[in-house]
Length: 462
Image (tube, rainbow, N blue to C red; front, side, top):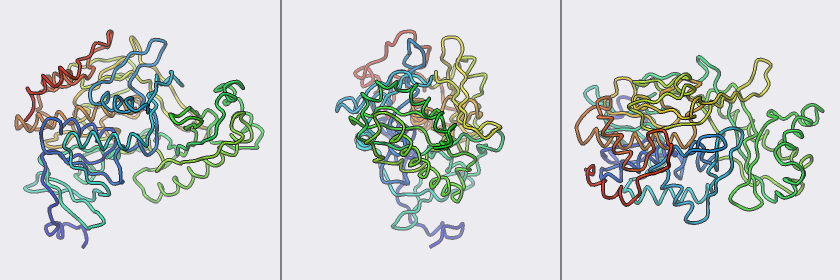
């Protein structure tokens, strides 16, 4: 069987749902949970064997929950808090102090998080289809009605009244002909990173030898001497939930189109090569790492940006740095622009630019609604933003919040039988507020509690 226009009519229907989420990363999971807890029929398609996307495959820290600075403010709440609460209940999370200007990190055990996503999706009644790859869309009477997936069992259709593209690479929008900008077409695409983890690190010895500053000095010395040609001289290492283990953001692979499988294949190999170069460097040059070894590589190379959909509104650099607040904001962000790139000399560089004023801006509803959309929303790193704005608002705290907003918006669209662009955003904001989302400048962290959410939830349940 082949998936072409003629054959699609013969593909069996796997299911029909109210809301279909494509992509089970942190944004997609939050979208599915938000919609599912409102009582609608929700399906989630994920190409790997577990949920979480980058949160479980690449990283171990949520950034974006807090603003940077000496007095961090919490700017993310609602469903994302529920995820952190689940991790906290088993001692699988801790707050890591402000690092590299990105703000306080919420470091967790990614293996436990796989199970947490399973539990929360199940509790919300979400149907999860793992090992399912999106390959096409279903159109009837010139309207988008669902998707075609490929599985080990063959091709299937899933029909849906509303859909959320949380694929990261805007795969659903790509197949549906929805307009987008591809990273690298205008501004250089951010570099990619293969993260790796090491065990048997003597963190006490490392700290006594100078810690982060010492590491940066050692990296520079290694490159200048020519002994270790590290691609990145300011890479980071941090303690994990597991004792004596560290995780890294050090590898840097540039000039790759993340939507080209051939280029991505070469990037994967380069990422692994660099990882073991760093292992050699750390073991020989950095106190505390003498007996350490790599015990895990990212499931796949970490992609920071690929396709970004053109939405009803496009978040800009000025919006972010100017601390702009929007009447239709569905979440907040305080993260600086953090642009990982190569400079003109081919050297690694991370450009930082910070939010002015009180350090917070709003993200409007239009950024998750593709232009003219009737039944589709986007959530996660394929949302509508310029390159610079995306480099600020791509943290998982914000992508989870965008997913939460998309999930509730899809429900309201169903309840009131309106297109995505005609959802009553003030009703959506009230719904988000009741759930615990932070929508105004968080001078005081007074959130609606879970008991009140359960009470108010009855207003919205379908």
